[in-house]
Length: 111
Image 1 (cartoon, one colour):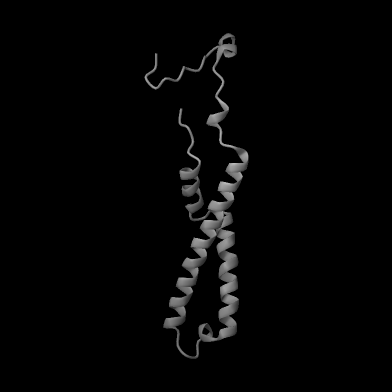
Image 2 (tube, rainbow, N blue to C red):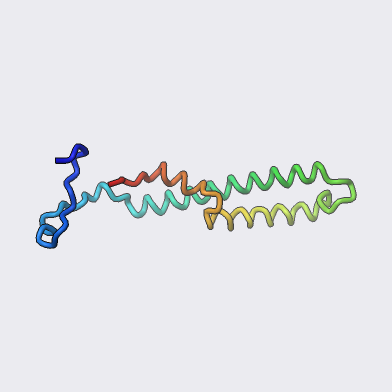
């Protein structure tokens, strides 16, 4: 008898028919999982985008008057490039923010 209430997994083939089937409630709903994944990746994109904007803002403040960072046309293009970079990094889950959020939204059952 186990303390956690779970039955042991049978080791031989004849006991497989008697093996308990995991209830459907233990598995997350695929639609919920897809929405949670999309939301967590979008949050990571938002977070990384704002981080890049703050970094770019600091660079502009420190730049000299004749720097390319002070030109308004360059600023718009750099902002667009930063937004695209944030989306790409979030899609790769480069920072792990989306994964951390998913661990909170969809906890996995440990056996």
